[in-house]
Image 1 (cartoon, rainbow, N blue to C red):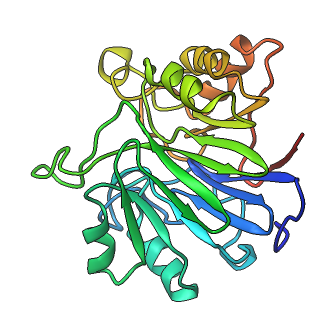
Image 2 (cartoon, rainbow, N blue to C red):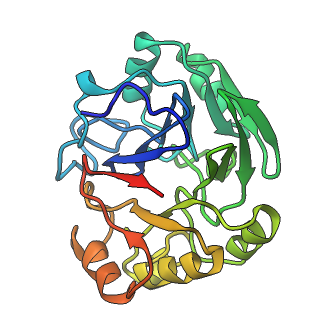
Length: 263
């Protein structure tokens, strides 16, 4: 069970599942791309079904002060979970350009839209929207009508980079040059096979290690793996492949519910 808050300069990261991470620092609790639903789908009876339960039970979730949403795919913007969060408390949401109307229509908010390069001070930190190589869609008719992004969380506890969903590309070097080396990078490693289809939108573990080397964070933690079967590789293949290629680099793989207290 996560603590209600973490004080001082400590930074605790709990992997809930998939790309849902609880970031706790300076008494502030930040949640990324929250999903507690059974399926990543607009329907309850079809679509990818979870293979592992959330690592933090809903009733054990501490108060949330800020929610970061990276894009509108169903495994990252899960309306049933967001409705539950909105009923629980009125935390602000930061979303990419074009995503706020979806939340407003559900009376979820307040929602603040950011374009790449935009920044917003909120909840004791500054959130910077940074580029990603991905896509957006919730139906066949709205492809790429909203933006997708990663985020830099800047505070006195250091920089946290949430890469969200992204392919490998030059944006990692650009982020490193603009912000410096982060204290923590949350890097996706799953849903990468077959490469001819997935490489424009998802990194594989080897590319995630390349991104880690470019960013030079104190620590990286793998996300986007181990919960939903979204591509051709087996559910544990990303974890196994990362272990084989990460070497001595500080690149952690957490199971759902595991946490890391970072130096």
